[in-house]
Image (cartoon, rainbow, N blue to C red; front, side):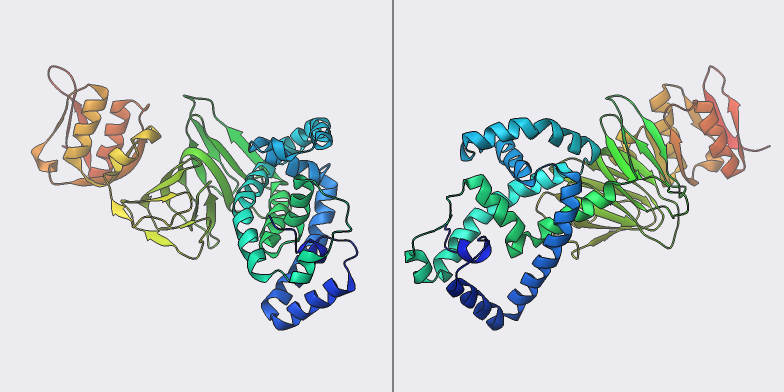
Length: 385
């Protein structure tokens, strides 16, 4: 990585020539001037926030590089300092899990920025800077990264992310389920999430005197029933943002891909990198968002198959004959449908752990029908007498 721009951006006291060159660049490029002003404002705010919550920002950069397999970039002194700071960093991660996202952001920017920096430096470096001997104390790669992450215009986003994530972590509740466990999460606005095994859901806890923030983060699998409200409810996953007003849908998410299957209502889906490029799902449709990709066009799916992982029977305007056949196959109990009801359809959601007769009686109540024992075992669903 070229260091020709270091005297302007990273020296505490750049030379007069460097100052004049930089001012000229700002005057010639209003966009650069605005970005530089934003950088100064964000840097001041972030510095105050990080000083309170992170023991050593330089150690955080070293931690990210070490975890990325770039420990060879660290000096012996930096590795020793990182070992000493690691317990404090782990406590910070435990208190603010979103800092893990910051580490991943540093690592991603480290990869991308190397190529961009080299290309831009080759095109714009003044010869006088390249030829002038450096009077600065040599910096290690991690020290240079620490400065560049704080100073470059492209990393203004990084600073903003740190501020937003740390502020948002306050008052958040995180629930994790073990493999095979299913947990029903009830939120303060009446929304619920059926959290499947091996998943984590973070949502805003209600604060006395303040409204509930309709936002949650999911890694794993969950079936959501979002309470209607004029305020949108946003669910973040590693690759996507799902925004709804009030609806039911299933989400499966990991670091590689997010899948959303809509049962009722409408949802908009976007990637985290291009939030303005949304797709809108209609009931019975599915879309997926892979890492660094836009959402796939919505496609129709069989809800029973697509959401089987939820542990629910989900019927939406389903032929009654299909629903009865599925229930019969799942419980291994014969269920017969009277011919008079063969043309009916139903909608509803039931837990697969509910008793079959209980589900059938609920269906019968919506159809003005009744459940009768069948000769030889099983049940008959027929019109009420």
